Image (cartoon, rainbow, N blue to C red; front, side, top):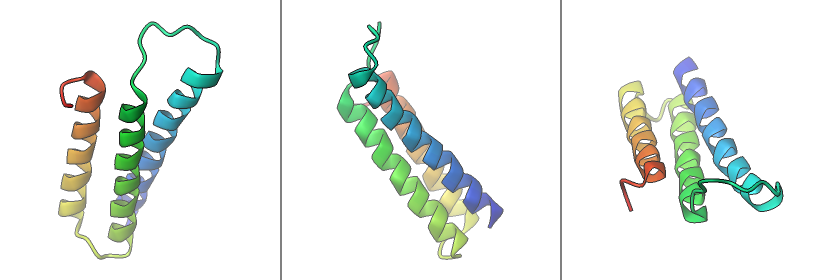
Length: 88
């Protein structure tokens, strides 16, 4: 149960980080040396939403810890590889 709350918290931070970065790109007036494309940030936020759903389903005991951690880990790896430009 506590692991589910940790998964939800990490994914909420992941969503906030990507959407805040998109907000900073548009409205801060800072000249960025490197910018992620908007579709990468939006897709990472969607992956974070999927992770929140996984965490909630684990809290409600619809998913086992092993599967939730595995799927969430794969989502993180996919998101990181997207930000590095390895995938897509």
